[in-house]
Length: 240
Image (cartoon, rainbow, N blue to C red):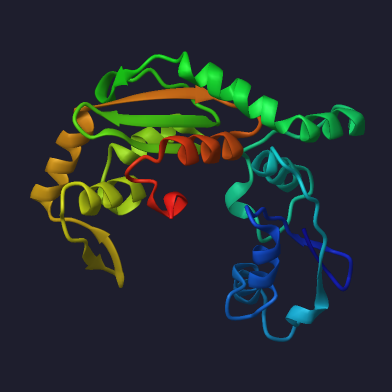
């Protein structure tokens, strides 16, 4: 959480490595928070980076959900992208339950893995996917487990991967890593393949299966656990 010198809550974020994330935001050149702040404020009203303070909370599970709920309940001008992904929290906070969950996070992740192993695979084109947060697993009959991912809306994420390559990191990664295509540049970014290659990508995905599981808490941590264990081809960053 980032608060300015006027005690105004300016930004909420999360990080797998909290120390590295704070170091990133502490430098103007690397701070995405401060760059967005500069864009949204005129020079006359602008504060310096040192006018902000960081407040942190360590947690072993639920960091993404904690971020989403905080953004919803304590809205800021710099978290517009995340707004609307959670409902306002009206229940009474239970500090004891929170501590118990954090202390038993390994068991919770193991239980999540067990439940996910029971879910059914569907062909890519006939997948039955509900709206909402969760994780998904993509498998190919020849190449095996190729990707494990998470999303605040797995139905929309499946639709994104089924569409144009420009908007899908999975399609770009798949095209380069498995099919050997070379990304082409548009608007200064390497984001697309030619039409024939895009059709081949779609054909490949249509031959895949996908299984999903809705998750209301801990989807980042379960995703990370499954990636470390199964090492899918396209989760190359996490496998490094």
